[in-house]
Image 1 (cartoon, rainbow, N blue to C red):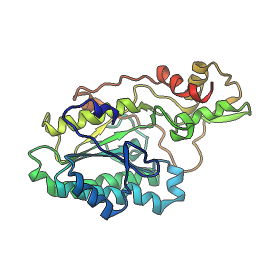
Image 2 (cartoon, rainbow, N blue to C red; image 1 turned 90 degrees about the horizontal axis):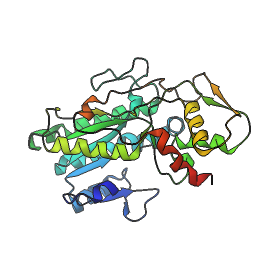
Image 3 (cartoon, helix red, strand yellow; image 1 turned 135 degrees about the horizontal axis):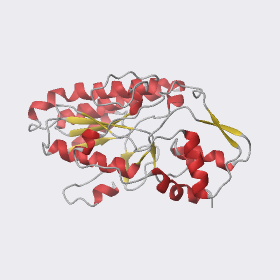
Length: 292
């Protein structure tokens, strides 16, 4: 919303639910009548659907609730987008891949290992199906698009808000701990994801390429880190002791995770997007308020 505020060609409205506070309006995306009323009232031209239960272990223990927000809400939003001829940008995840043969491309086979990845993939197909009837009336541009993203980091209200900043909690204790040194992740700053969303929307609406009726765009950070490598960088940046932390080379417990879901960003870069925020230079400023 901050990025869009500088755009004279957009009037922006944002919605939330559990953390709705001005300027966000409260809207339950699982409530069909409420969503229909919202669309009828504001008649959006572009909809960016970002809501999800993205914690794989929580998804496994709360399957009906996760299904409602990850899949059912997507169906409701996509149906309204089709009805009102609104372009839909759906944010998805690198967890649609199994992590066994990176790098991945938009055309690479999908094979999610956990319920979260399966739900997000189902959401992609659900949105694509709902929007299929809108393509002929969309003026020649795609009716919607998917942006698959990796793990995110950025300004947070609590360290647990992101699985990246959550790693820093290990630095608040001197007790010996093991930290995952198995899975390779490609963290992306939320500002870079925001600019990617806008690049995709602009390119699709202006017909900058032949992307098909519902294209997939991929975003990965430039560098790979395990969580153990992340926490070591955090410690150096903050000047904290991390000698009590040990690398754990075993796959993490809980829901299955892919080992390496590096995604090729060539299609996104063809739109003029590039990564501006580097993890090693940004993470210290994000974490410092929680430590000093």
